[in-house]
Length: 295
Image (cartoon, helix red, strand yellow):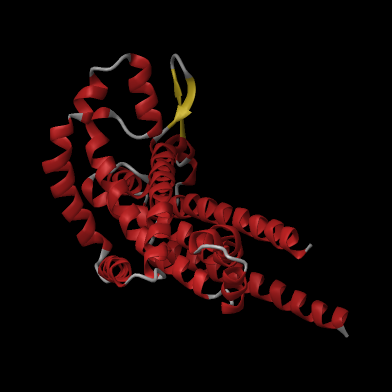
């Protein structure tokens, strides 16, 4: 009976795959005939890699934008995770003041459009605060290896302030959602475990650190993976402040070549590779933690 059901679902998956392929084929046919669009896929690889006279094959516009998107997403997540953890712990605190502060942060950031936050942080942080720190000037005056390291990890000196503003915006925005995930994960643990730990004489922080958070983290992996994927997709918003990430490079390339469908299909595939990789890694981590806690 089980094998028959699996075979039925397997046939359904194959049918859905064929329908999806057929839909894309029909869309390509309609673009080619209805819009009289002339496809030119052979030029796309040169916008991924180009041959330099001295360095050989080097990344071109689309791969450079992809690497900037990865940098934005990684730094934003590294900042958003502790921000979200603190917000989640404050929302589950026993103190009213902590709960009010955590709830205010989460409610405010989750109910504001990210585009508005990008402009606010860009014009306030990069124009008012960062110039006093002289980060770009210090990096530009630093030795060559420091400039190379800063450009490889962050952005070129002339784009560094805008990059920092974009990272802070994404981190604060995503941190609000992560805070809600942390709160839900902590509250999902049964009250009996809190009571048993208190009966053993453990303090609240000891209970959180040793009992509650390890179990809650296992339950938080799927929504955290979804939030990481959302961070990658939300990073496209900062293209409005001229951060040269993948979407920005796609718009510039489309305006220069008029290869609308080829450019955006390639950009879509690059985004899909990033997001699917995150989903796969999260699935492997979830399976490993499930096996570890099953013993």
